[in-house]
Image: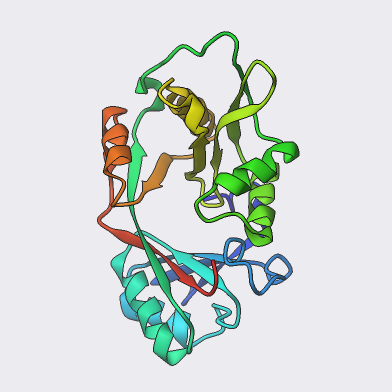
Length: 247
């Protein structure tokens, strides 16, 4: 999603054949994927017209560096199937994290909420990285911290600061252009802060030509209902982040 918008994370595109390709992978350049243990940065996006073509590209060529901890994502069921085959053929572990994808067709129609005038809307910066990392469900270590720092530096984000300038709520676009890491401190929930930030980020992304979308865990029924109330549409069946290695 970001390759044709400056390619801030240094990805490249691999296809099974050209010009009539049937499978596509995006992957980080070798110099970017320098930490073999960081699956957050060693992220691949996959798409195929023909599952066999994707299977061959993934398992029978050097398109994927199976020696690293990696993450493969895409909105097609065959991606998980090939990752399951890689467990045996490549002797790698697999953690499959399920998700649903929601898309908003017109962020101008997102509900508006007034922000408490004592609060301030801002954007994330380097001083916020530690708190974002500590509260992220997949964070809390140095690998995730480096990933979050790269997002803060390269992508759109919005946050809300309390009257003392302390960070209390935020949302940041991830490497695939989705609304990724979102969180509100428990003491400030129920004030529509996530809705205020989500609308701001959606409008900013939309103005830059990005689709407005995000992922929700199937177990998070509460968030699914929120997505639907805000006018988001579910656009995929159950898909998975395929993580080969340590999170």
